[in-house]
Length: 399
Image (cartoon, rainbow, N blue to C red; front, side):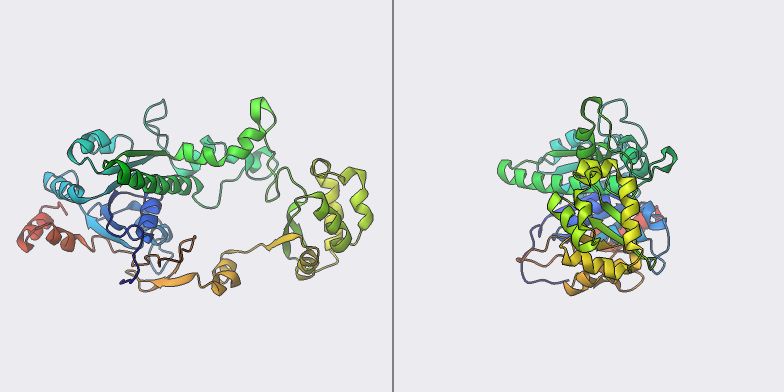
């Protein structure tokens, strides 16, 4: 895709030994900003996220989301000829991102120390479950397991012990991918000052625990943690979903006493409720949420969800639709702001959401999702390999 105005990472080349979500999400965002991302995949099978499902015209939902705007190069890095290709790529690359199994990159000679000696300007970003060192270094780490280790499950779900719930998306992977992305950006800025590359070490555990800052401090020095409260807020009330009389659900949130008074007067039409001693402060409303919920549900039972939302709007109380995925695809705000565009893929054109954080100076890169090995021949030719050499590498299974 041609573009007129420069993008922030035009001219930056990223080589990625990546699979699943954390590293691909990081590098896709680098590609959004204009970086050339060369995705190294296993011949024949590729990134195993390609096989997670077939929900997007035969392509995997995770893969479509995290891999647009990349070039796919197949290399069997157990073969010397393939590692020579990788060396040639790294000689001209700015960034290497990897989330292989713990220790695998180092065994392949791809530790930061080994690479820094040969390629002093190269930035190396290592993404792992638990980080280098410590007793958990070699422990297998999948998203749900990190949600568990990081305490997320302990504060998410219903009130009963058996009602804990995971996030409905890969939140630990996403957190790690975001910190890897910003870590690489900061390393590029630092290299602009020092002239040399550095290492970015990102762990899924530390990324998610950073996001757990509120419940951690709420439970400071052994204090009781926030209780699991389903879709409601654990410590602010009323704040969460409430049923309406037509079977619909309304999500609403109150933040202060002024809003509580307006809620009682204009939404509930029970102004005396604001002065009820059981509910006269947020801490009391939260402690007595069972009684207050019954009162709210009773009042809402005589209205449709649309009528409840109309009253909430008039009272300037925050509210939201409880959308399913079809509702999000059709969301009027995303449509009005023209956030959906099309990208190409092996399965034809697909809708894709423009990256959050619109910048007035450039248009993000929104190129195709690559087929496995789609760019192998072109990349090898770019490195100086003749057609016969490429054919020989293919016959040997190196590519």
